[in-house]
Length: 425
Ligand SMILES: NC(=O)c1ccc[n+]([C@@H]2O[C@H](COP(=O)([O-])OP(=O)(O)OC[C@H]3O[C@@H](n4cnc5c(N)ncnc54)[C@H](OP(=O)(O)O)[C@@H]3O)[C@@H](O)[C@H]2O)c1
Image 1 (cartoon, protein in one colour):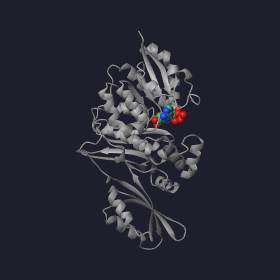
Image 2 (cartoon, helix red, strand yellow; image 1 turned 90 degrees about the vertical axis):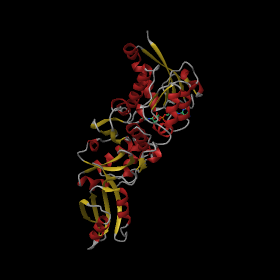
Image 3 (tube, rainbow, N blue to C red; image 1 turned 135 degrees about the horizontal axis):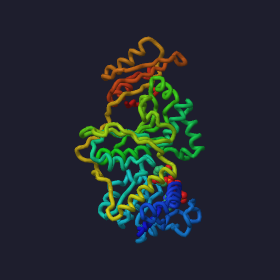
Image 4 (cartoon, rainbow, N blue to C red; image 1 turned 90 degrees about the horizontal axis):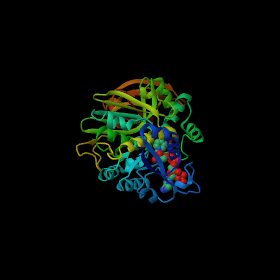
């Protein structure tokens, strides 16, 4: 006999619409294959009169309690976005014993311990595969398939908008502002692009990914974050000339008791698998003691790919309603006391300087670096206007603080620092 599974939606925009279409199209096949009859019972919208969804109006409500308190609803699917009221609605749903499926990285990253506790205390499931990397099954890979391994690195292109912008800048030599304006016209960037281009979105996702991967809570506010707004076509072109491709990466690394988490533009060797992930695609590169290197790639956004991941969660939740799962890692308000978050990471650095084209300038630069034990791996010099020169160098592995101090010690009258971009291997 078929098992009926009643859903309540919170919000019904792009993603809610995509989920509605998938579940409508796949309903009969899922019923036949899995014996589960998935029914959408209620959908919270801001205004029924102005709702932009194909869900029949009879199911719509403007009152969240109609979803959160309805005893017939088994699974609450949250597609509202933003931190509040989404997080408090999810918490109430869990406290009422309802399983929650969400794609909301912001609400999750900022309220995760409370949500997980509510789920555990009330025997409810909490599923969020689509919150990182859209359709890419990275949450399940980390929490199930790789759960026994010791993961020491996650490195991801987790924001499609910024990857699209950097790809266009790289392939066409265009400016950031020009490509952003085009992306906004095409609907690939929001009218207010701050969350994407300043790296907030990637940082929420990194908080989720690294918490799961490293089995300790990595709070969002411990993540070092820089966006792509100051990246220039010159940086990208010089990097290319030296064998590197620029990406906005979300990087998490763990050694025994130290975690470093950072989101910033990063040069990768052209041959690195992530360097070839172009356009709006997402990818997550994982390294572990036993799994070694692996990469997952796919569509990180869009109503259809995201709906695929969400509906996978819904179906999984439907099959495990009596025995729901929440990820098994130490998700507490504060990180483990034996963990130190490091801001003084080690990597290589791409540095572009605008220097007076006079004898002795290179010596000053070399002196500033060698004084901090930083050695230079490769260098380019190009004449510029008004008797100046562009000096572009890539260091060997060095400490962040040492590089910052070396750059600060340069006299801007002779040598101006135009850009500093981290380089990963
Ligand atoms: N778009 C993607 O490709 C993608 C990919 C992965 C994850 N996600 C995540 O999925 C979630 C939804 O994204 P989306 O693109 O579908 O956003 P969206 O198109 O803006 O849809 C959000 C919907 O929720 C409604 N809503 C917001 N606050 C509400 C409230 N207080 N009461 C009732 N309804 C409310 C909005 O109503 P109005 O229309 O009246 O404003 C809108 O219909 C977000 O958490 C996002 O981060 C999106």
